[in-house]
Length: 142
Image (cartoon, rainbow, N blue to C red):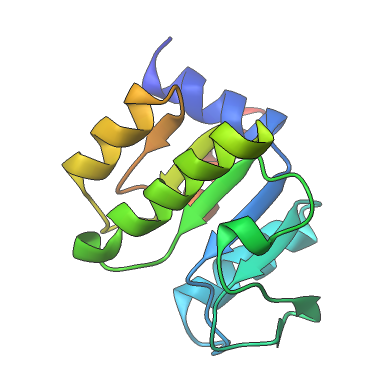
């Protein structure tokens, strides 16, 4: 499967997105990208220990606290901090059987995180913007 096919599959198939490091600031990418995805029908789950509510949705301190299914963990953290959400995603996959994709937002790369995700059969995307990739998938259909 090419990268383009993999991205299309993720965008079309997986609808429940836990946003790790989601921002409370509407001017930040970590806020408006999930807001855009919510408007496109995705179930956005904020994960931010310093917020109780973001986008009128309950925010959780970590992935294990999220009571509903998670398909994708979309990460808005610095590259050097990206391993922790992947460790949480792997632990959750082992415990609950969900989490199929870890997606590091554009500008975020971490090879140790990639290796850990792939060793645990989690699809891994890094250094790509989910907003732009969504738009690319659906622009190609027009």
